[in-house]
Length: 353
Image 1: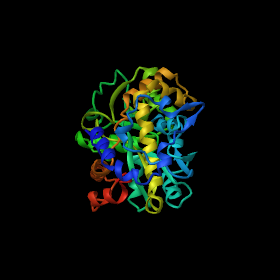
Image 2: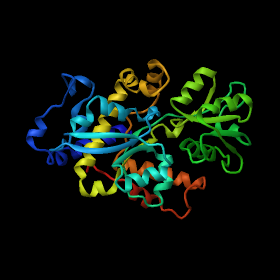
Image 3: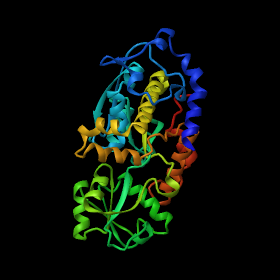
Image 4: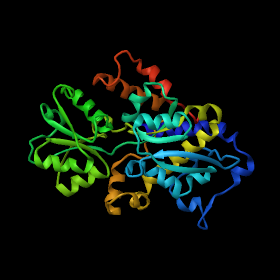
C-alpha cells in the first residue's frame, strides 16, 4: 500500500520541484567512470519519482550512518552509483559510533546535516525536542528474534517468563519485540528478563542457556541463524508490521527551513538508491560487501528479505510514526501524556511537497 502512495506523492510534487531547477541543470547528466547514471540503474523508471531536484551549484553535506548495518546499504549505493552526484550533492559519510542522543544533537546543531537511523532508537530521544525532522522511511525488515530449534518456543507468546538477550536496553529490536510481546499478552517489563551482551556473543549466550532467545539485526542476525541452524520466532515484517518502516532519514530542521531544495535533493537521491537496491540485490550486496564479513550471495538474500521499496512519506510517514509512538506508550517507553498525532507531526517533514 505504501509503495503506491509514496510514488503518487512524487508525481504530485514533480511540478513544484521542477520549478527549483534551472533548465540547463535539468538537461545535465552525471558521468561516472565513462558511463551515464542511466547505465548504472536501467531498472528505475524516472517518472515514478517525478522531476529530480538538481541543485544549481554543488552542495557539500555530512550524512551519518552505521556502515556495518546492511539496512543502510542505500547510503553506500547512493554514493557509489552516483545518486548523490546526480542531484549535485557532495556527501561526506560519517560512520557515527556515539550514543543516539549525541547523534541527534550533532545533526540538530549542524555538526552533521542528516543521518540514517532506526526509528525505534530515535523516537524516544526525539520526544525530548531535538531539531531533527524525519523526511522518509528508508526500508523495512532486518530485526530478528531467535531461539534454538529444540526450545519448544514457536511464537512470541511462548517467551513468557523467559530471558531474552539484546545488545542494549534501548536497542530498536528490544523495543520492537517488546511491542510484539505486549500485543501477544506478555508484559515485556514484568514477565521478561532482558540481558545485554555484545552482538557476536548473543549466539554463545543462547547455546550456554544464559538466554532462551535473542534479538539481533542483520547482517549478524542472519549469519547466526544460518550458521547455528536457529529458529526465527519473528521479525519486524511479521504480521501487521509487514508494511512498517524501520529505518528512517532524519534531516537537520534548520536545513529544511533555510534551504529546502537541498533537503529535497538528498531525500530523492536516497529514495532512488533504495529503489535500485530493491531491484538489484546482487549488485547492492557487492556494494555493501566491503563492510560485512559475509559472502555476496548471503548479503543479497538478506536484501531480498527486506522492503527497500517501501518508503513512506508525508501522511503515510506520519501515520507510521504515530503508530510507533502509541505502541511505545503501551510498553512504557513514551509518556502516557504524549499526544502521538502532534508528536508525529512535529518530528516529521514533507520535503517533497
